Length: 176
View 1 (tube, rainbow, N blue to C red):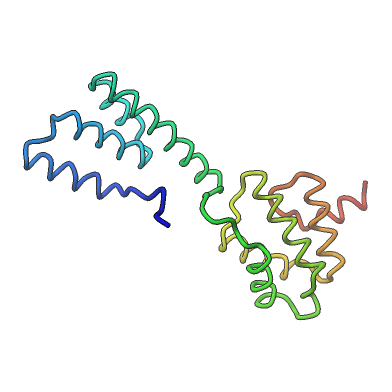
View 2: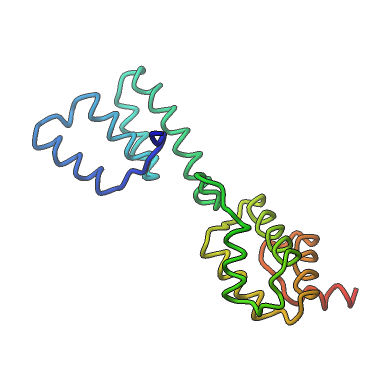
């Protein structure tokens, strides 16, 4: 199956400009439209808009669609929802727990609680990539001394709608 999307690098944009200028094609509508698309794809919407304004309306309609799609994708990327294949939390949580937790903490209840935490983060547009998974699990292993405490900390943080783990939350709940 062919990929249906891809990546544009700013260096490609610069190379495209150099080649078009050398071949004296920098004033063609197709070149300008492509330059605007590249600009939108790398997040330079101001430049893309300026180029788009110079073109005939038919090009503007195309570029409006491109701009809207790239803004949606950039917003997903900046919000931590990168798209692509869904994260396999179970597999990765298991791998990182084995690396960071004492073996007595490695069981289905712990995996399910950690998975709840990462699904909660993802639903709240927080990054849950592999680096975040591992660093969060490592922090849990350093700050929680029992399985029961781990489960309570996760559940209380979700209940309080925290997006950063508050390891002192248990003490706060007890004092209320």
